[in-house]
Length: 298
Image 1 (cartoon, rainbow, N blue to C red):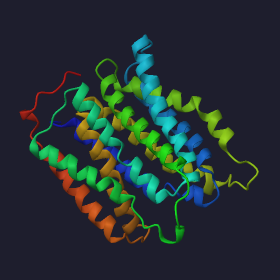
Image 2: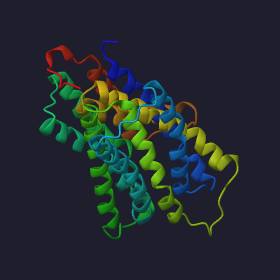
Image 3: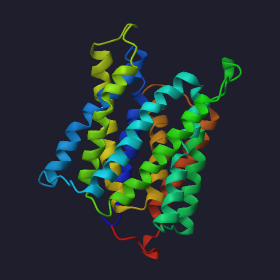
């Protein structure tokens, strides 16, 4: 493959896109987001075992690997945990457009510290992807009324920074760690936060423990977990300032398309514009002439 990063990034886009279309189903049936997190961490285990089998079960235990692995894992899983607080204290139509801009942090850090660059074609693709990201999550306030408080905004900013930093460290770690061990540490750190998720769960309310709860969550979260593994491989072979916006803009595009085709959900005009921008961004990033760039050693 001339562009292995693109193949892995497109797999992530596809898997995360389909996952996004069905991710809310378990919560609609009474399965709390916090327990969805628990199921998600458990679905990370099979891909982690597969990945470690590929490297002969060799675990990198040096101090640098442990530090980078912990940073990647806790910024990702910790950001997800904090997002639970955000959506309970503020409007999702404002929170998710803020969080969607996390690739901006990844891009900035990668340009400054990793000296990553793109051609004019790639730069236009990155720009279109960043414009599309908040548009996918846009929805009018409607009858929600005035937004009270600022705690939700602080939470959203912290999640934005956490996920943006995670992308940077994921690329940085690939210089000294194999992708399989990075994903292993992501899995372990996610599992370590399960007690926090259980503590945050309100067990006094009715919870769906049947097929439509944990069963449906497991099916959808497997897509999420496998997409996370292929994302690590995408960062392994590609530049962070290209991989991050492509995956984060492409996945909502697939989600919107699947929602239209399978679920019969018609997008608003803003989402249609976002789909068009994301498609153009993906096309530009795919055809970018990488031979004009000096890649960083990995």
